[in-house]
Image (tube, rainbow over the protein chains, first blue to last red):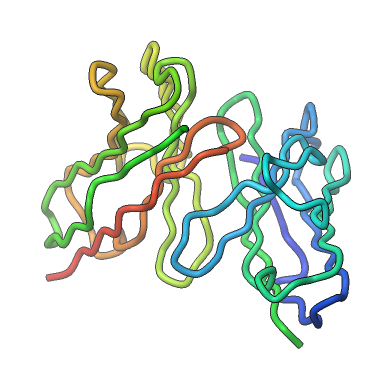
Length: 109
Length: 115
């Protein structure tokens, strides 16, 4: 099983600042099959980024993904109040044995 | 528009069986993998397993193998998650999700197991 480790567990920032969230895989992800999700309280997760760097439909360009191999990053620029929720990475390997990271909570400083 | 509509909340006793559903619409059901995700109260997302409706090829995460059964009914574009004997530790929100990456999600089914 591919283990994804997200860091930090919690990050405290102010609106207008930039958040940098990390996701490290226990082995190299072939094809960079890494996605990022946002989950607001009481809601299902929402796909933000797939293929490590491609924004999903309707996702603002303040959200960007980068990385390859085992190290991936989600950057959120110009933080807005609604961005202060939880973010997960997911690997979706062609074996279909997907896994999620444990999540990063973005909180208002 | 792609939609995944899940069955309603359930309250069960330990040892009881349960089957929850996820009805898909807005796309060709048999041609996309559909999976299940567990989220315990206040915790993170856990991938459980996935099925390809066209041939019912099913892949379970090791920790869920033998504990749950994932199935589909192609005639009604519906996926299922089933337990034969629930435990209190199965109390969670369960989501179905389409594809890889999981681009579309159901609204979730809350399962509460309590004596």
